[in-house]
Length: 419
Image 1 (cartoon, rainbow, N blue to C red):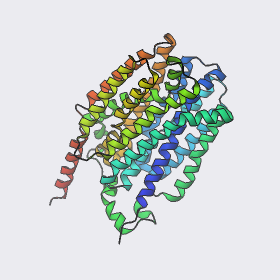
Image 2 (image 1 turned 30 degrees about the vertical axis):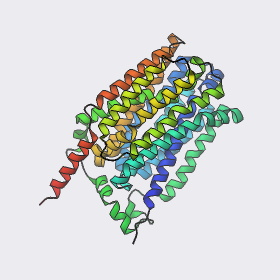
Image 3 (image 1 turned 90 degrees about the vertical axis):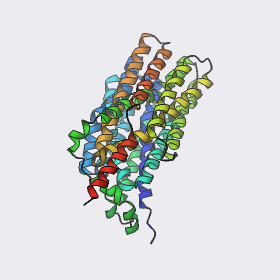
Image 4 (image 1 turned 135 degrees about the horizontal axis):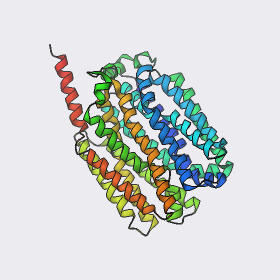
């Protein structure tokens, strides 16, 4: 009897939600100039609003990841997707800076825990040989979903205005919940579409999901590799959030582009980043992940610095695209490292990492807004700061080695099975 393929349905739900999440969070960057004009917002105020999402995402990340470990992915994902979709729609109802800040803050609280719980879901439903590839696919389609958002958002804004555009984007999450709730089960054994042969394939993943880390989660977080993992992700995210917050404004002000041209160029970093994730996941297992991450962040820093010396917007955006490509080589590596370190506490470890990443989502646009408020032509200063952030991420991978962590856990598992 051949194994069934129900696990690929789980991958499909993960990919769909990744796209929806990124479309809903990236749309604010394209809408920012229209919102600022309509609500009479300054650069500093808009920076604070763009950062509100990252602040709440960071604050609620660990609680939502812990709930996924305790209550199950099905229940937690259902609740948070409904919550964030509602507040996506309510973005269009904002009437001043305070109301918009709180709506975006609560939107971020809703999205908190999405990717940690998706990581746990893939960890529970996929054998190890397929897990990294699925992570690579998930982050690639997330990036590509974000890449098509600028022209998609501009089209929606042109047709129905920025307010109704957010209502339309919010409805996509609610449709996903209806399909997910009726199909998904936390335990593959409870799914009617899974036969015995597929369960045998998933035996290691199901064991990993119930394996308790020696010493519990508190001792787990005392490990130095956790600190390195979250620090490198913070500075990775500091750079990445520029692409989904200030980039459309940068293209208009630093390069004097119109709205349509800026929307098309804004696709480039996320488009290239998706290919970086895919290539990273498809590389042979023998390629050291630590060296790949070190190379990726080093190349990112050099390319961001090079952009400040360029006089062609086309060349500058190609370089920014490759900067995103090289940094996104690390995405599947970082998220699979959460599985290797966390084991049963995968969602909690992933939430810890993503919490710091989204804290950067608060810090980066706010810092950018303050730099630009002081000097409207200071875009190169912001790029220098981003290059420095990439250097710090690279330095962390001098000491963080996921392949070594996986080998250590495999050795421990073999010793435990010996009589």
